[in-house]
Length: 228
Image (cartoon, rainbow, N blue to C red; front, side, top):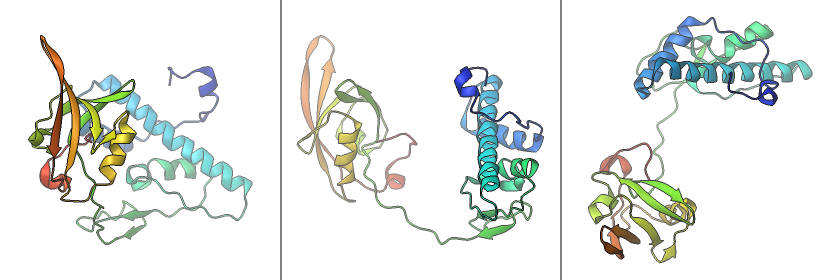
């Protein structure tokens, strides 16, 4: 919070509650699962989370106070509502409005105090999305492969880190949007011709055409949270 400018600080709630230790402990567990950063960086994460919750609660109460008799549905991630931590307790502290928490669940395990009601949606298969399997980095007027995921379509085709992507099925690639459009048009089982420029030590750069594919389900082929 200390890094915010005076203008930014004018937009945050004056009254912020930091006393929910159970909520803090749950956030600590989440942080440890996804980060190896220091405890100081957890404090930044915790402050950002609480500020988000408190701002949501402030805006909810402000709207309802300005519109008497109105009912509001708030869509938020489970971490912001379960056990009434996050948003619900902050709304109650500010206004005392009656609230009901509806949480989605797979039904594998339930704790009665997680929410007031539970919704059990049917599983929905995500639409197919083709991926090269690279970490892309944007540079002025072009994109390059910062790294290539082992076992990915790009890896199997011979793409290497630092290759500069020039074209996808004949379409010039100037930025990440161009690459996304090319991939979006691919169906499961399709392939693509990707032209790359490869830098070589002590030798001129070379241009290579790689036949990449067939594209298959991401989960079947490889896994990474930041791939293209």
